[in-house]
Every structure is written in structure tokens, then in C-alpha cells.
Length: 286
Figure 1: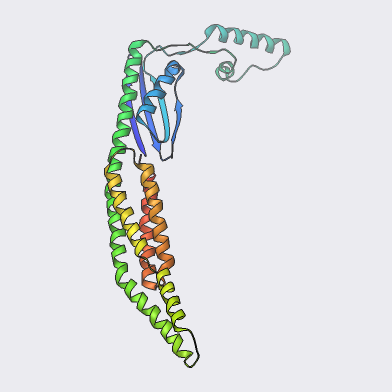
Figure 2 (figure 1 turned 120 degrees about the horizontal axis):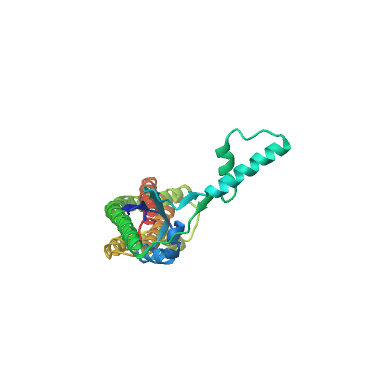
């Protein structure tokens, strides 16, 4: 959901720059910085942003650069003259020195800087509104480009997990044989002692069934396919992909706890690494 859009519109006496930045967020977190001249249009601006940007931490700014002689901020000459005369009279009466820097002193006095309240006319607002829409479109285009890269990344990571899942099978058969051999060896060490062979057989079957991972493999394979098909559905699948990734994580964790085999555990660690990269980037999907 990261993105950036910037457009500058030139008017007769000013340049208006619209800038939008977006970062990852589970919902839309919108902050705006709008000059007073366009404040009355703030709700309209927010409406434009809400229509196009569904999620993300969004910063929206409008900057104005005045290029003509008529700026909205003016120095109040009458106030400056009045303060100047008052300061001189006070200095004479109290026998104190005059300011070394008159401008610095006078410009700090109240009401010396006068800002005229201006409102944008309809023609100006149409230009600014067009710039806002273009900036939003630039941000959306940026997101689309990022989405295409994420699509390729997800396909690659899902394929890697599927490949690693297939690599478990030979170790799975080897693991069962090793477990049977270990139990048999332990029984030989207690040769001569009586025990219930039927009960032992039942316990062995129960133990091996507890280590069976066929269900986890099947569910994980289904989650991988479901992730790809959901991603192909297009816009608005970000949260759903996040839920699927969580389910994939549960199955991979169960595989790890049941593996009881060094090579299988190495494969599980690699699968977790691939999945973590998916989870990090799913936050970027709308």
C-alpha cells in the first residue's frame, strides 16, 4: 500500500503543489495539511481520497508558492509607523537607547504582519481539484506497479513452499522406519521380560499415527492453491490473503512439531522463512 503522488498546478499568481504519501496500515489513517484558502474544500478533498484509497497511512499536503507581486501577507505600514513613533518617544522620556535593529523589533510587534483572508474562486478550485485527482492517480499507479512486483514475489514464495513440501516425503518414510527400528532395539534390550504383545502393537500404532503428517500436508497444499486462486481474484483480497497465510503457518508449525527428524526440521525452517516473507509483504496488499 505504499505509494507517492505529486502534481504542481500553475496559476496566475501562484504555484500549487499537491503531494500524497501512503504507507502500510491495516485501515485508512488519513492526515491532511491544507492552506486556509482551501479549508472550506477539506471535506470534498477527504471524499476524493476516501473514494480511491482504501487502506494505508496517508499524508496529504497542499503547498502554495506565490510568484506574483500580490501576496496574501502584507506589512501594515500604519502599524509600523505608529510603533516606531511610540518607541522613540518612550526612549526619549526614559533616557534609554534605541533598538539596534529597528526592522527586527518592529516586525515582531502585534498586527504588523497582516494576512488577508482569501477564498479560491471556482476557476482556481477547478485547477486545484484536477491536480488533486492527478496526484491520487499517480499514487494509485505507483501501487499498481508495486502490486505487480508483489504478485511475482508471492508466486515465487508459494512455489518454494510447495517444492519444500514435496521434499519432505522421502524423509517421512525414512523417519517411520527409524522409529520402528528404535522401538525394536529397545525391546531387544529387555529380552526375557514378559509383556503384552497385543498392547505393545496397539501402542506402536497409536504412536506412529500421532506422528502421521498426511493431513497437515494435504491442508497445507490446499492453502497454497487457495492463496494463488485468491490472489488471482484481483482487488481487495489483502486481508483474506493474510488469513490464509496464518493458516499456512499453523500447518507448517504442526509439521515441525511432528517431524521428529533432523532433515525434515531443516525443511520446515526453510518453509517458515518463505512464509515470513509472504506475511511481511501481505501488509502491502489492499
